[in-house]
Length: 302
Image (cartoon, rainbow, N blue to C red; front, side):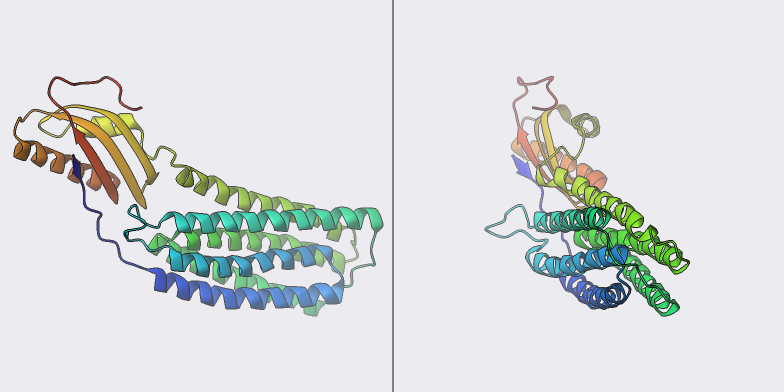
């Protein structure tokens, strides 16, 4: 059996933590501005938008806690690393989005059934909302840029959440302009599209992270087989399995039959296989089980 060393990986947690602290401060400012305008105008859609922004701040707090646990390097208690902590944090973001969606729908239905006082709107409130929109856009692009540079799932997921908040704010802002012009029913009507936008964002985060948490196949065994068979000295490759996330960290297991009969020569081939797969799919941790010449299998996977 041969097993590749885990490639060196810089610990970017301190950078992620700084980004989350900055965005937390900005998101709290956004919440305060939205809640103030919503309470002054009586707007349901704006109050729902403020609730959505509360989840932004909660996500930042969750991300800060998760980031401290998501050490990229393995240790004695976590020999496969700590990468899934970030995925768990991303699922927490999806849960917060689901809560926000439920609250928005509940409030909208209640307003339709019970009714409410007319929404009052003025130019000052609209200008405040434009400032809020600018802050949200800056936060989303800042988090996404740093998240992609560091390959941080928690920052990318949080940036996606903030991006959904931008669209929510745009929709609400359009409704507030309509209310300013006397179209009162827009406030309740736009509360439901806001809920759909929130749900869509949460579903995207959930869909991206569940396969990683349940160890779904990361690479097709046929693709791994085709690449391994190109390495000189390999006779057969079977019982292939993979998990993880391409570009983040993948784990590959396989059984291998090679031409040489000496241990040293066979080991050299397994090292070549590991290096080839690392170049294609890295960071990758490859575990290879060598088998005798007499044993070959047509079953590529389990």
